Length: 200
Length: 176
Ligand code: SF4
Image 1 (tube, rainbow over the protein chains, first blue to last red):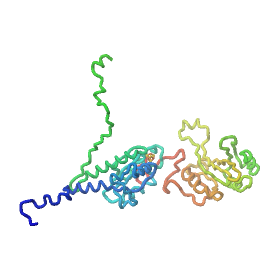
Image 2: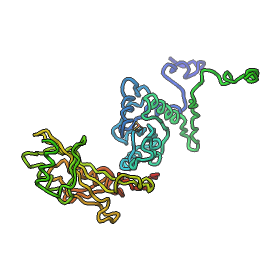
Image 3: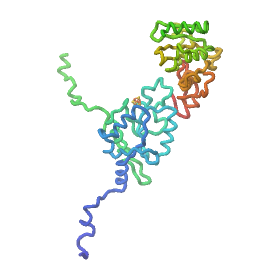
Image 4: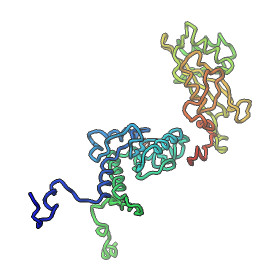
């Protein structure tokens, strides 16, 4: 059909298959939905990480279910379990072997800061952040699977905040979870009124 | 065989090289002089009446109180012990053999106390003795391959000794 010169060229011709977005968003979207973790677990927390991989909690819903058996294909390192000094050098080597961009989740009390081995464990690294840079800490001994999923989503926030322009700096996401439990009643409801105070 | 009978048999055989016993406790034990250990163990293993064919574990114990105030009240002299839990599949009896050792050989700190290895009698003892060596610092003389088994090869000290000092740093990782 020859073009009549009045209807715009593109309008209505591709709309069903085309989405317009910025390149940055497209890349970040792709990255955040295919964070491939590295397959390795060091102690009891790893059991919980395996549960996250199974159908009940299903980390695949967030695109992070493809546990890779080699660091060369992984984007995310979930350090799950006690890191001993003997293991620390291996953890660091695996981290160095991962291609950029890479992220680290410290899962469990042991990995966050020594946990139960903090005082008398001669063999435990007091926090894996002494060995590799950590993006998200998930506390707990062991953390619930939901907590690890939460940690994963915080990593995704981080990925989403990445800027690809050369001079742009990443905007770190403001966590939308404050970390405080929400009270069912507002604090002012607890306050004792002046008249009650006077009578007391 | 009852623990009393085992003790009597050993005493008849080795005389004053059997240095102590406690037979009416939950885990009856017999103490043996370190020099005689290998001989006694061979006898326990090979004698038809005893036939101790199963070594459950080898353990090390450090009797030491690092706090000087508590050390005065401690009910023991500082020393180390090595324990061998033995039982016989054939006769269904069991016994614990103990060896008392000084904390340091010749009381010179840093020189590990020595005890003969029994790895040639029960192959189980091989790794167990390596573990005791690694964590408690007891040298098993005659062991075929006495290396550390749990800690890294370049680890300093024996961590389960009561006076062990934690390292400040290990390969660039802050440790305190
Ligand atoms: S944090 Fe607790 S559950 Fe996790 S590895 Fe350490 S001891 Fe085990």
